[in-house]
Image (cartoon, rainbow, N blue to C red):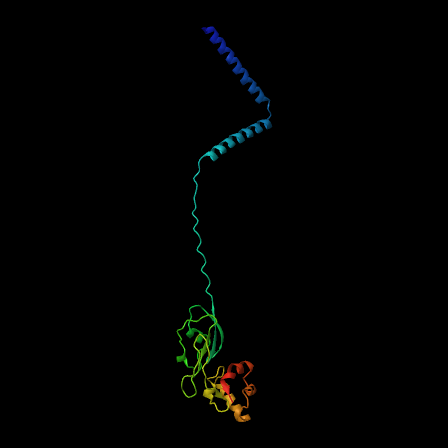
Length: 223
């Protein structure tokens, strides 16, 4: 079926009439809106447009940063202290806390060093300390020979000659733990003024000697 020119012109005329009618109706509707309605309509248009732009931006591929976490090094264990008992012919006998790997010479220095008359040759000053160890510093015998003493790791003591409180010189008394030159002379002055000691406990009558100091020297003296 052929369509003639008249028919085509008629269709174009009708289409133009419809378009003019739609455009005219839209213009009339917009003209009927107030300023407030137009502002709301514009805001809706902006929101719709903005949402479309935001959706588009979010849909774009984004780079991903990969962080490699390095494991933190484990903390090194704290060194365990070594507790030793330093006794015998030292200036400050007692219990001392030292570090692992320290040696007998370190324990001796912690106790104030040896007293005069100490027999350091009887010890291995280079021996490594052990926890709970007793370091006994022996003294030389009155006759000048080395007195028997325990090893640095402890053990039974040998027989040593005791210092006689009634005949010992000041130098011999100074070899006792905690007895210095002043206290040694005080002991001699006491026995010269009050007569010989009858028991070791009489030392408590000497000024400067208390229960603690007497306990340190009780087994080292006689009357």
